[in-house]
Amino acid sequence: MTTATIPIQTGLPKEYMGLSASEWQARIAQAKATLGQDLLILGHHYQRDEVIQFADLTGDSFKLARLAAQNTTAKYIVFCGVHFMAETADILTGPEQVVVLPDLNAGCSMADMANPDQVDECWETVTDVFGGTTVPITYVNSAAVLKAFCGRHGGAVCTSSNARKILTWALAQGERVLFFPDEHLGRNTALDMGMTDKELVVYNQQTGQFEWLPGQTPQHVKVILWKGFCSVHQRFNVAQVEALRKQYPEIQVLVHPECNHDVVAAADMFGSTEYIIAQVEAAKPGTVWAIGTEVNLVHRLAKQHPEQTILSLNPIVCPCTTMSRISPEHLTWALESLCRGEVVNQIQVPSEVAEFAKLALDKMLTIA
Ligand code: 13P
Ligand code: SF4
Image: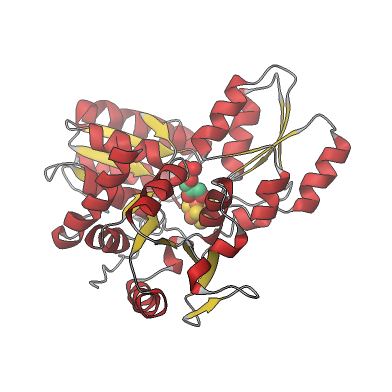
């Protein structure tokens, strides 16, 4: 499989370091006015407030992929999110549209847990051990080259807001699914669909081995789960749920499906970031929430809904450090460069990868 190299961010030009808030505020507003309709800024919900305020459109990863696919007019799409999201936008937009990621170090540690060599090795092992038809499904949190792998092998992409629909579709196409790179989204979705633990097996990409349950055989398996995880969402646990339920008996616990299954099982609801926002927006004044997802979003919801009590499920949880790489200073630099006619940090997926990755993304957009 072709490996795309992720470029590393070279230093931010000196003149952009240490800009005051009032400076970047004014300069970003000016650059946006100059670029006008040529510019579309997309912002993921985990972005910090200082950055998300400049987004023309915000969303979870599925909504942002759809918005990128629908936009045919903006010359420049500046993506305030992480690398795989910008790659997805590049694949789904026209060849003349330019996608920019203000800081190239904005990656995703979970996406980095699956690389093409590991997936090739896993695919061979799966073919040897299981035979028959396996359909590969990649969570959108993955490199474009892995989306292309799914496109080449009759599979699809999914996000946390449509994993159930995609998994249902995939199981109708073959005997089983290889789901990567998030073990937890895969398990939570499969169990929610009514599958049992025995129908799921974990593939450890470090050892190249399956982690069989006692008495489990390949005949039992419907979903093979890659052993990847999100370090932010692994910071939530059942003890936190229990402690908050004791303190606030009326509390509603709302978590992202990248959390461990025991946390999801102990919660009242789970879903994507867009789903989490929708639940809070629909709730009555006085509702008390414990939310298990990235803390920038939780704090924003708390600020936007003072009529409710909104707490982070983990009071000391840290933000997603890679999402936080997008700073107002980087955004100022990226936008002012565009105003000067200079494109910095363009995300361009090679055409031979984009062609097949688009097959897998289009499959998701059609099914979802
Ligand atoms: P959403 O699709 O819910 O926005 O999640 C993306 C993500 O990276 C969560 O960690
Ligand atoms: Fe990746 Fe986790 Fe950050 Fe989402 S929160 S972008 S999965 S590291």
